Structure formats: structure tokens, C-alpha cells
Amino acid sequence: MKMKIQIPANLVRKPIVSDIVLKTKVLINLEKVNIETNKADMIVDVKDEWEDVKKAFEERGIKVDLLKEPIKRRLDRCVMCGICSMICPVDVFKISEDWEVKMDSSRCIICKNCIDLCPTESLTIDY
Image 1 (tube, rainbow, N blue to C red):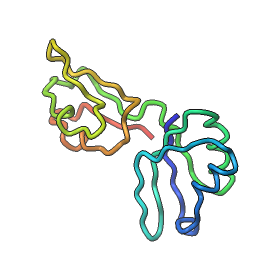
Image 2: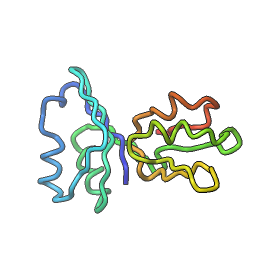
Image 3: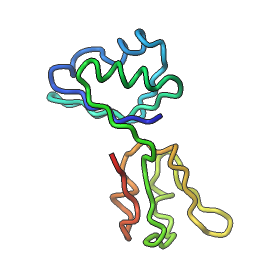
């Protein structure tokens, strides 16, 4: 399960993720991390027992949003130009032999490159 974690300023300098891994004994894959002086935002992927991890973050006052479908594509707007496949760092988008752009949203790390460059604005992320 992918989650968006929002750590407030008072907890930014604390080893939150390490502490939760040790407490829950569940591995947390950090897919995207943005740490600033007054907050931290992370996209994490937890394969097993994600409910325990979510609860552990929330018990520390950390906001957690589940990302059941990290990126969505509106096929009625997509023109299959393939720009998304050229700029995606984790191969969410692939061009098939029949020149159709295929998508595996489970690979998405929410870098937003595809969203920023999509000429038809057919890609979105819901938090």
C-alpha cells in the first residue's frame, strides 16, 4: 500500500521512520522524500501489515493519506502521444507494439513529471 506521509515541523528532525520500522517490524520503502525545515512529505510503500504502519504514524500525530491509485489517466483526454513514457523515471508508462500507451500505476512514485508535461492534462493524482 502506498501512503503519503506528512510530518509536521516539530517531528522533522526525529528518526520517525526508523522508530516505526523497529516497532512494527515492517519494512517501509521510501519512494519519494521531500524534507524542509518546517515539514517533511514522503511517499512510502508498505507491502505487509500496512495498517500497523499507518496506525504507528498516526499515533505520533503524523497525517497519513492512502494512495490506492497514485496516478489516474483520463482516456477520453489522452491522445497517446507518449511524452509520459519518455519522462517517467520508474517506467509507469510503456508504449506497446500497437503504439498504445500502457500504464502500471502501482509503480508510480508521484514525481509529477508526467502531470506537469502532459499536453492534454489527462493525468491526475488524488490524495
